[in-house]
Figure 1 (cartoon, rainbow, N blue to C red):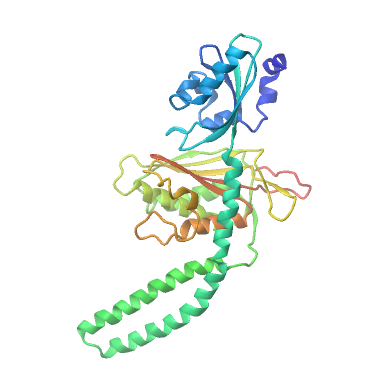
Figure 2 (cartoon, rainbow, N blue to C red; figure 1 turned 60 degrees about the vertical axis):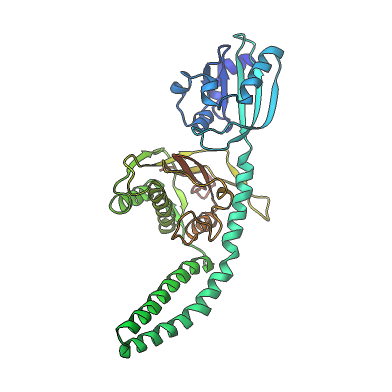
Length: 369
């Protein structure tokens, strides 16, 4: 098996969806598969110049696992190891599988399985349920609140016609507050829409370019954008307008997190093809493939850790004037598209990641751009 790994490493290891790296007797990384490059967000050439200890937090149990493998000459597994660091973006819980290679002596193969993948998908189902749980509330608010508000506003306008200067300030306040409540209700109405959405092939790079143009011409004109696109990405199966709204929301949140006074603000828009990510659809045995990854990353201060588990729930917000509906809407739209959305946050490194299904031809094969 060891000989086969050495001879056919690229062909075999690169198809694995889990990160695999080899470490020599000096602790230097000698090989890494594509999944490892993605996991550490570092290219192979750069990884080969580093020691394993430089990738992981100080005193990481993974280092001890590697040493134990060398001493015992046998495989060792360690479960639920946190290798999170500012570089890797907060908590990263993995299972570690390490095994020695016969030649050259002292070389160890490491495979990492991120435990949070399943947990993220379970949490995503909770996000969808939270968004849909206010569907009835949105419909009720639209029907039961907008009509009375219209009457209140009309009465205030009638009073304004005969009121003195001081009283006009009060009637204007009534009108303004009524309008504000109507806008909030209209945002809630989105959650009540159960009509099937019109979908088709969407070039996600065209969507990202459109969102970027809107951003740099307005709220993000002071921020530098970095694009890391996979040009071979196949079309996404979705609704273009809704995807624009979702990504515009995420980019706007990123710009607001960076702040208007930042001199080094940066937002990264990235895409990648990640085969091997599947999610089972609740209530059926069907497993949906989610190979298309879209990332929006910013170098703002990050999301408070206590908010992360509930970030996509309605009315949860980090903004003083926020309504807490923007990310709930993102979760609903992406969920309606059959995808998942997650956030990983650390100071100066907050990433929103969308995993989406691709467009399939009638014969079930992926279509390519």
